[in-house]
Length: 146
Image (cartoon, rainbow, N blue to C red; front, side, top):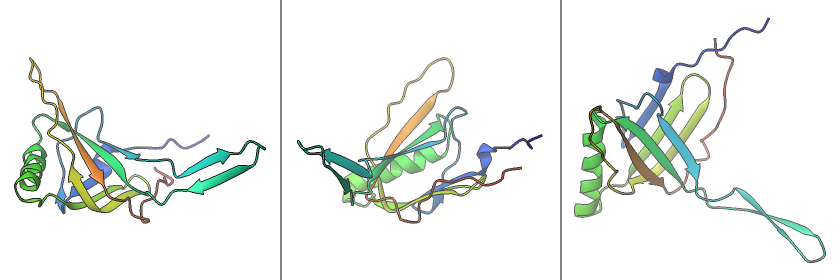
């Protein structure tokens, strides 16, 4: 019989500008998305295929926070600092301690003011950050979770 694996969302650590982000949505924590395909192909009229490996390692990070998260105030302050004095470029780091997934970038910034709705129950706020490049240290992996 195969031993069951365990995932604990509180083992996902995210820092922006060295500050730990907390108060995530119950449905989503973070999404990492590269801006371009890592490898593309071009097929000539004679059927020959050429692969091109992109040097572009930029991407987008979406953090989904609960409306009540104290990190909303911090992220909004970063955006305001960037608008006021172009001082919003910070480091980004994510580690999933359930396995071996790591994402890192030396240059990240808030893209825009998030949408914010108010209703009869608290909702979520999605913060979009662009990164100049995901570090070569970035890996996607898992381990033998117990």
